[in-house]
Image 1 (cartoon, helix red, strand yellow):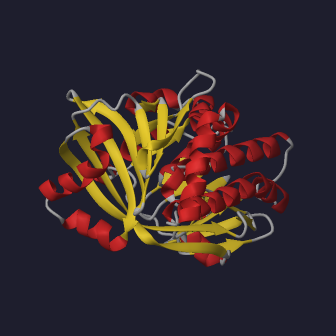
Image 2 (cartoon, helix red, strand yellow):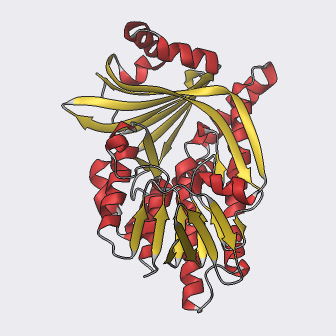
Image 3 (cartoon, helix red, strand yellow):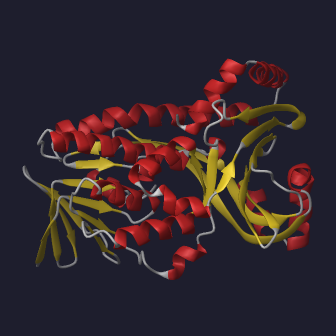
Length: 392
C-alpha cells in the first residue's frame, strides 16, 4: 500500500473544495485534494449554472489574489429589484456606499476552470482525481484516508464533498433537513431588452422567480433564470416545446427582459435544505454544501460557503502562527464557532421567507404589502438588508 503524507486533505473537487485548496496553499501548507470524478475533464463546460458572487465574497477573492482571474468572466449586479406579486409592490436595492457592486454573476464552469488553472501552477497543491474515498481512520496524531492502494496521512481533513457528503455519512454527523415540494427550473437565455445590470426577484404565488444579468455575448443580452415552482410544473416546463416555454416565461418576465430570443440551457433541480448539527469532528471540518444547503430564495448558498472558507482560512492562519496542531479539537471548534451560527441563521431565514411569500391570505398579504412599503421608504433598514446581502 502506498503511503502519502500531507498537511491537509480536502475531499471534493467542486467550487468550494477548489477554493479551499487555493486559499490554504497560500499559507504554505501542503494540500492534497481528492475527488472521485474527473476534475480536469471537459464535463466542466456542460455545467451551465451561474453563481452570484456577493461583494463581500469578491473582497475575499481579492485578498487571495484570485479575483483578477475571475473578474473578466463576471457581469456586475448594480441594482436589485424585488417584487411581491406585481410591479407596483417593490423594493429597490442599491449599494449604499457607492463603492463596488451588489454582486457579480459568473458561470460555474468559468469559475471552476480559473481555480483549476491556478491550482495547477501551485506546487503546494496536489490533486488526485478519480480517487474514491473508501475509509477514514483517526489516530491521536493524524487522520488517515484510504482509497484503493493509497493510505494518506494528514493533520486535518476538510469535507467539501457536497450536499450528499460521503464523509458525513462515514462519520455519522447528524443533520437537520427540510425537503421542499418545489423544484427549481433553471434556464439561461438571450433576450432583446437591455438588463442594465439589474437583478430581479419576483415573488409569485407559485414561488420565487429570480433573474440574474449575465455577460453579454454577440451583441445580445443574456440572463439566468431560477424559478421555484411545483416539481410537476417545473418538469413539464422542461419537457415542453421551445415556443410554448417561451410564451409561459414571457408572460412572467417580459417587462424585465423583453422578448426571449433563444434558450441556451435548461434544467430542473429538486429543492431541499439541511444543516449539520456541528461543523467539525475529530481532525475534521465541514465546508460548503457538506455543512449546509439553503433554499435559493436569497441566492446566498455559494456565498455562505465562501464565508466558511474565509473563516477556516482565518482559523488555520491563526493556529499556524501560534504553532498549534491544525487538527486539534480546539482549532476545529474555533472554526465551528465562527461558521455555524451564521449558517444556522441563514438556514432559518431562507426557510421562513419561502413560507411567508408562498402563503396566500388576507392577513399575510397585508403584512407583506405594508412591509414592502415600509422597507422601501426606510433608508436605514434598506441599507442594513443590502449590506447583509452583500456580505459586508
